[in-house]
Figure 1: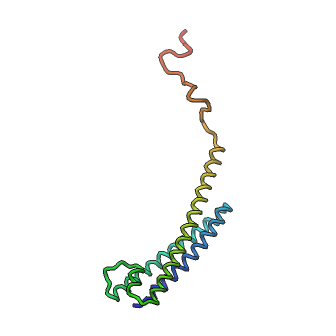
Figure 2: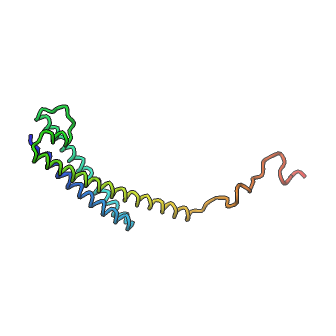
Figure 3: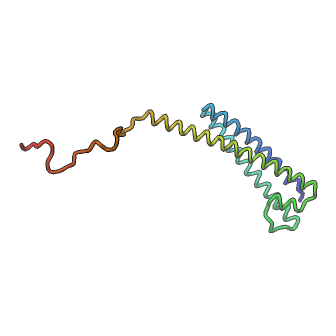
Length: 162
């Protein structure tokens, strides 16, 4: 088993993450424009990307596991670090470069998702404030509870027997 399948799966993961970052950038613009139909379409595309990333990552794990088994390292975790210990200097450098590039894309994606999350949170706050202004409130605008309900007792304010 060669390292080529691991390198190919890492390159595919990087490509998918770059595409996912582009979706996140578009999502920011759509959130700012408040276009709910476009947000729905982007969410569907994001789900497809997530599924493809998950599938590619499983392929990478499988390729790493096969590589480690082929080289007699059955008990080691299926990580890039485990593979680089068994490869030559050229492959090790290539794997390190791909790992760094993938980590950079993931970091960009985390930052963009954090921004999008803040935009969504602020939108929800604005909606709540708008709803609070539109619906009537049954609040006592006086200081404290100065309006008291009459206490029920045997005597009422109007005695009907009299």
